[in-house]
Image 1 (cartoon, one colour):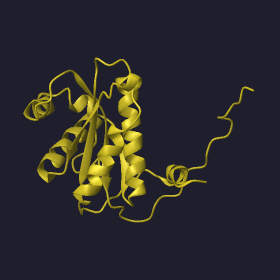
Image 2 (spheres, helix red, strand yellow; image 1 turned 180 degrees about the vertical axis):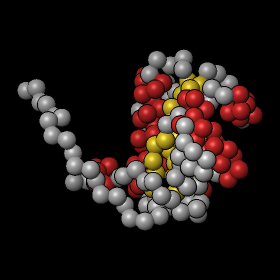
Image 3 (cartoon, rainbow, N blue to C red; image 1 turned 90 degrees about the horizontal axis):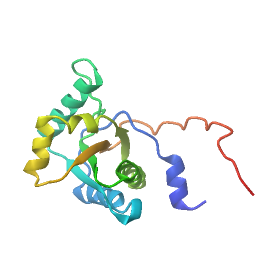
Length: 175
């Protein structure tokens, strides 16, 4: 088995991170992996916002927590210090798929670098609020973008979880 397929089989969603920030170079590699994901007709609809500022990260976490309906003190990002938000241009018919592929590439890239990651939802709802629309404007992002998801990244605090058993009967060949 080659290294890429092995990494895909070994990657797990991580739900406990150390507070230390990974090096910026590694975060850039993860972002690049997302930007190189396949996209419908090569239109490259996703954009990625990497939030490493703790204050902004914690504000985003609080918005996400409220949308998810969790109690005070719960961190839906599980302590990950870097949050990469993937949004995609809604004018492209494949924007949801394009953003999803970007997130998948990013999680596999994080694993290949010895980092943990997890896909966290509710980016759509976050970026429908005035506060987070304002961030897009502040960054000079124009257009109609929808939040696809977050790739929460950091050093794993603990052991890599064991894989769940694979469900049977999900492969069919037509010969």
